[in-house]
Length: 122
Image (cartoon, rainbow, N blue to C red; front, side, top):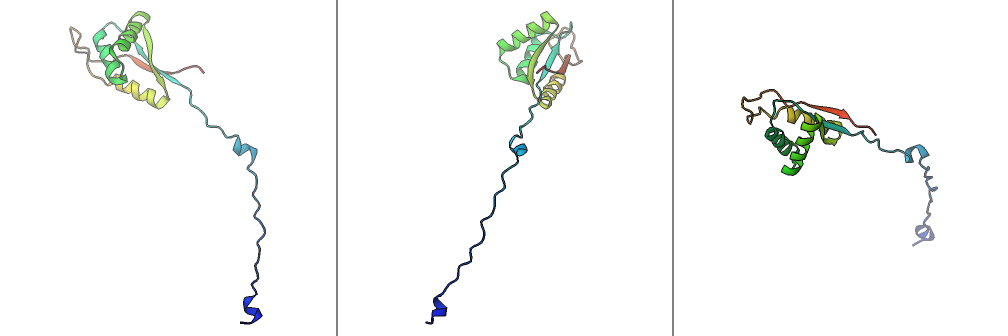
C-alpha cells in the first residue's frame, strides 16, 4: 500500500447553531373555557319522581343526590344540577329535554322539563 491509500482526510462540519425559542412561544398557555351550568326549572306539572328519575338516568346521580337537587328545584324554583364545558352542558340539557313524558303524573305531561344552560362567573 502506498502512503496515499492510508491518508484519510476528515472534514468537520461547523456545529449547527440552535436558536433559542422565543419567549412568546415558551409562555403559551392553554386557554381554559369558562364553566357552564345546567339549570332545571320548577313547574307545577312534572312530578318529583320524574325529576328524580331524569337526574339519575341522564346525570348518573344516586337517589339521595337526585332527591336533594329535586327538592332544591321545588323550593327555590330552580337549581344547578350539573356544571362543566359548554359542549357537555348543551348535551346534558338536550338529554334532559328529550327524556320523554312524565308518566308518574295523573295526566301524562308530554312537554319537556324546563332546563337551560348559563355561563357561570369566573
